[in-house]
Length: 360
Ligand SMILES: CSC[C@H]1O[C@H](OP(=O)(O)O)[C@H](O)[C@@H]1O
Image (cartoon, rainbow, N blue to C red; front, side, top):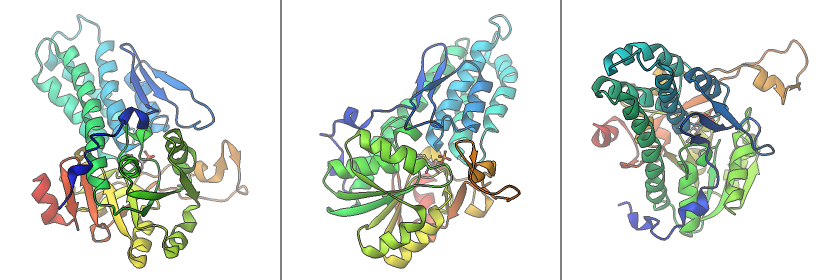
């Protein structure tokens, strides 16, 4: 039974939301450039859907929910770029905007939140009246608002699973930087710390892009939450010491049977956790659940430029002529996951039947 007494009634959410990756100004989409955090805080201003697609592709904005939100605003920018007299109704606009939506959709292949957000914007175009431009803006605002509410609820639900005095290991960045705020797995950690259940936080560096080393420990530090950084390769050794009881991670796509695609390195963490008797919690909003994909072997795993492995901040760190392979996600089988926490509820020991019971 999941205790929702951790409904965070007394949690000061503003204390936990210092960074916001996305800000709509009414004219442009301001994106916190995560490529240069934590030492440089600079925003990239996107004034077209193509600029948003390029920013998603380049990881200016990253994190499954955040790229869905950014893409939704990209559709708003594309609509604003249509000459006022050019598309008089939603049907005409839908046809004219489709190339922009397809370009946004192609920015990154693994996080289903991107496709989910664009499908919501298409539904608006298919049903809106003469005020379709305003309807698109309202939908992008709703997607962002719903994500923040989902993260706060998941924080409560996930923290309730963690016994007081526990240690938690997290991977990649799943915080305010990857969402509309508060975070998914980091939201559970924030709630767990606030509720006195999480006593120790460890974060992996998360090679090669170092989301953990550059983003997670910085983001938690903004909240005054003490986190210990470890090398990815130290995770199993840490588990052996008994300092952690949970591995808590996010997701980019959760399949109909509970198989979960997440940042590369999640799969070996789950294997090591099972070997050492730790539990694995996946935390993601229902916008990350893809019931149309039966199992993890059908997920397209993004492979990025090998230069992300061969160089660091533009400086080559490997001898010339060396080849690299750079898949940036892997799939954790549902059998290695103890709980999938969503805003609709918790699926414990996920399998196809238990996923269907919650997601239909
Ligand atoms: C709540 S973020 C979910 C997910 O997205 C991250 O990937 P990336 O940094 O490449 O966008 C990572 O896999 C997180 O767990």
